[in-house]
Length: 481
Ligand code: FRU
Image (cartoon, rainbow, N blue to C red):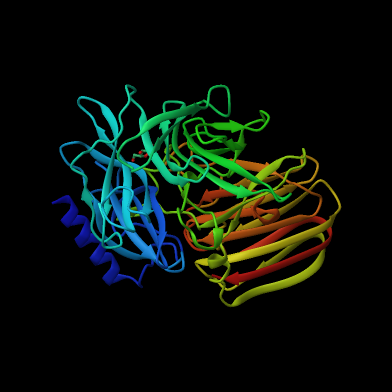
């Protein structure tokens, strides 16, 4: 009944307003109801599959399903029917998907196999299961031999599976309390414990969730393993966040490079459950995050649908100041290709205050170079007619970039929403890229070496940029997206 009401509501909304009016322009949202983590990210035959945690019957988290959409360009998505629904074994929690190129599981060559957690409340258990699709993900059959893996701990979930050449088998990373356990299998059905990682590394202020393990080239021509570990609560600015580790997966377990302070993939408040696509073409490693935070995900003011995904990001390793590597996330080339008409282009020396108004758009990109700074800070304020603003401060003395959304629009739906986040400023000249899309600002510093993703709920689009401070040269370019 609730589902029908919500559907009617969304049809009514769709008919009475300009199309997609209450949605971001380029970010993925569920057709109706609730959404959290991206699941089952896999590329096959030109299609990027996005499965996701869905509860279509309400705009609050509930019994989880896997929603499904596909895209050929990572920006425009076609909604498909729900892929997996709860049954007597439990609700369908997060997981991953692989293309079984060699038919190791026996469901057919090139079948898509989903590996997911079932969550049962009473009695409580979490177990790993598989389902297969022989029609490119359009329909799935749960395997009759489920579950394929269980353990005697309450929090045992979010299996990420991919083929590992070094191990010569499928490797599953599973979030297990506050560590990641690794399992190996020749056929996706029989799994054996291989190793564990986590104790005394990284942040431990909450549960470890949604791991991902993959390799990337290093700047000096080598190759390293990267382990993403999402954590909630205990994120850098409270609630949810994604940490990462760089090291080596030796076929059984993850061995981190020298212990370093916890490294965060994103320094905003709204970047969680980040995972990457299996089988992405051209050796790319493309990540997607749920653009929300469990602190207030159930409260954000969006209407008949709730929560958005981030823009997709291509990952790479870049040199860090201490001689090691950092994981950089740059907007994927498909995001750059979505650039539309020019809204503003200016170059000037900043001596005090400068304000520019530009054509009001829901989605746009700001590229901003500041060189030869004079003074401690340069402030960049994005403002709308209502006087709502979010403020980015390049803090040269503190070597930080700060994002403040305390006056950004509607903030009173939850106490944890009004906030300030910050990341490092890697070098003297600031190179910033801001992607704004109705309810979000994704700020990339220095090509993605540091990123801050934050939601904002202004009553109308920010259409004014104000710069304050002193600098020899400022170069600003704004394009619609
Ligand atoms: C992360 C998470 C996962 C779980 C899913 C349930 O946001 O808590 O650990 O599988 O959401 O919806």
